[in-house]
Length: 108
Image (cartoon, rainbow, N blue to C red; front, side):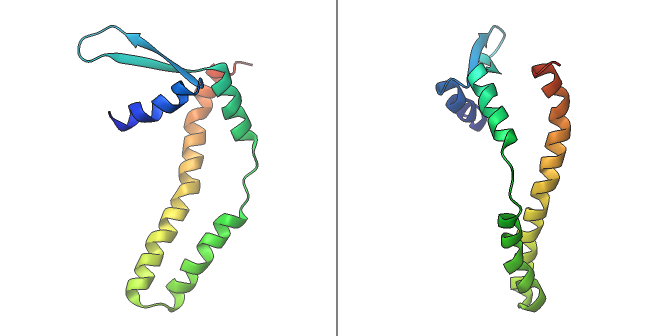
């Protein structure tokens, strides 16, 4: 089973998404849609505040290693910090890309 199918299987199993078989050539296909239960859970998750402290804590130690560590340790710290820096950027991009479909899902 592919990863996307496995990931979609859990919400479908829990009643948060529903899939319908689609006709067509090739292997069987399903089109998934979020259910009312799933929509409520997403809304609740999106309304939860995000604390900055855990993020800041995770950046403190690698920053110290970068300043005073051996070159290999500094490179590993750079790797970790760049991943941490990428997360907020990805969240911003995902939010921008999902805002248009959100208007379709939640019409005014």
